Picture (cartoon, protein in one colour):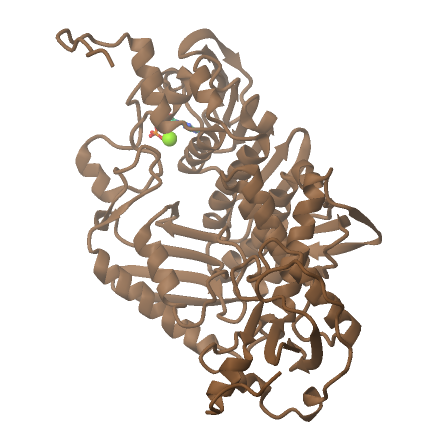
Length: 582
Ligand code: ADP
Ligand code: MG
């Protein structure tokens, strides 16, 4: 590469500098909504109406009934570092507002077309101002409607490089929803309404205040009745720290990490200390693919943390991190150990993993499993190394494992893991050959997900069709499944788990292929239960199907599908000099 000439330092033109600055604050449409909502909340609004078109790229409109602005402030609001919220750095020690840098409106204006119309309460006249790419186009009088209306159109119209980094509309919409959920969870006393592409998407009624029952009610509106019912709660006050938390009981964990919300002084934050304290408190009881639902509110003196460490004010830094970690973890642990109940039925679908050091234990006396049956499977030459026919089917152990004799040794299949593997490969095969076979349901299955998950899942509706699912909203809180991949015969509870996981994997930046695999693996996870009784015919069939799999040794989650004890090993374990002659 040619060496750059660094000898001449030039000042960037203002237009370039403002676009660069804007890039730090405004990453995507959801960042615009976040800033506008924060401004409305800072302005003391009690009602906020939001309208989104084209996943926020075409239009983001926020109307609030807050304090409004004078004409002079409407103009000033768009200047860089123009804020009414702090005067000096020392004010950050007592910060009580979301905003403080005065750069959000400046940044948004630099990269979009804006119309702002605002009116102070009781003022006889409002004011309206339009800008494009940061330049004022027009100023005029407006009707005296107190509050503020702000419309942001054609975001990134003059920064095409940034526009290219946006994800699919579904993904951008999901992030917009997340921003609204965060604002709504931390402000139960506020009325929020959201329309997306002309359709009412959320309408969250205002609660009486921010007390416990009000928070609980707002939680129900966002997470849905069913999920909220699985939560346990704690509220602790220690000198100047208050912690209020809603979190999953250990026996009712969710399948996705999506439903975790952390707030510090009502500000949504991403923070490792909080996250780790949460996960640590579940340490012994959490299977690795399960995650707690958590809505955590921490209120501490503003001087105890720094919000000025991230351009979008998402991350924060605590002054006494360790102390806080211990405090939170101890509180959560205490609450969780109180709430531990007898394992729920769902826990039974986790299949026991046989201890590989003692494989013969599995055959512990269960008289009828010793019955030797004479059916053998016709010999076929090809197959994986474990496949040495003929096999004699011995029977089912704990309705979970299938035992076969093979060449004087013992072959044990985990019926669930084996069937998972088979279905997984079959689904992917169908995918390659023109899409999965779809089963249309005469009676649609209703799945209760809660309003925000419903929205999140529905943003992927079109993509989900490619995976064999057809669904629609049913009321605000449920989804109706009209069609499923024919291979996956799932009930409402499994579908709920699957949709939760789906909304997470679809939101991830993984390539389509790996997403497809993750869908296949989660979908077939529940397709066959460990405790189903299998007929002899089915057991014989299973071994043949498993043999044809590309990877017959493990299920899609990596658990072994089979275990083999050769005749030599049997002899060795019974301390015989050698295996009996065949
Ligand atoms: P900050 O929020 O950091 O002060 P912004 O660029 O977001 O900076 O907003 C600049 C100023 O415009 C705010 O300080 C506030 O005085 C005013 N403002 C913005 N939005 C509203 C609104 N919805 N209602 C009333 N005032 C607003
Ligand atoms: Mg602001």
